[in-house]
Image 1 (cartoon, helix red, strand yellow):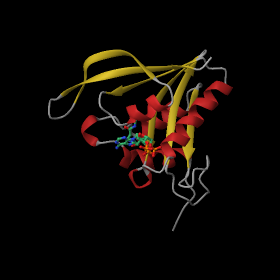
Image 2: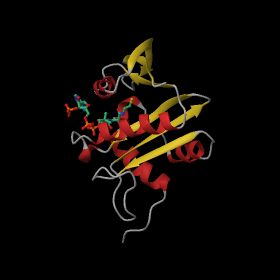
Image 3: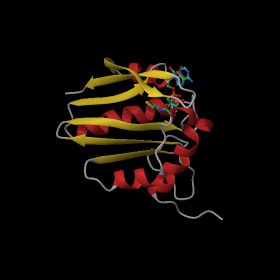
Image 4: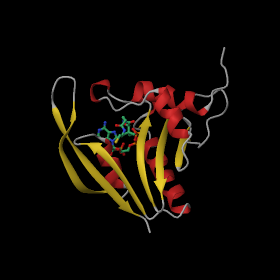
Length: 156
Ligand SMILES: CC(C)(COP(=O)(O)OP(=O)(O)OC[C@H]1O[C@@H](n2cnc3c(N)ncnc32)[C@H](O)[C@@H]1OP(=O)(O)O)[C@@H](O)C(=O)NCCC(=O)NCCS
């Protein structure tokens, strides 16, 4: 039986499959619901057909979670579920994130990603540029150290 899902369920349904476990990037349910209760947190969902709001019993294809302070906004999480990748949903959702932030009066967007994440190609396509590196910032369970790349997009 399908039960109506709230936003946290929708986010977790994608989170649980979207992030490679070895990098420890996925958040748990508590982190997501705590974050959603803070002012300045923004959540965007995307349905498999690209619509912003999945219908009540439909699965969720992806989401973004961001946090704004004054005129800056950080993209905290961005993911499309594996079954729905390479169909343009990442482009659609990122474009929406940028447009919604601009409509809120945001002037600078930023995010941090591990070096060589394929998401970097997507961010670059929308104008994000690398502005800093934290060398060997991420540590995998295997002991490998990976740089974090800070990226920004000025939208003012
Ligand atoms: C990154 C991610 C959101 C892309 O979602 P998507 O729906 O597949 O994205 P799109 O279909 O819109 O593709 C966008 C572009 O990104 C690039 N891209 C996406 N996945 C890629 C991959 N595995 N390898 C190389 N390039 C890739 C391509 O340039 C692609 O455009 P193209 O298909 O026209 O070549 C998705 O792979 C994901 O959720 N990854 C795991 C979570 C994650 O790492 N999030 C980012 C944290 S910083």
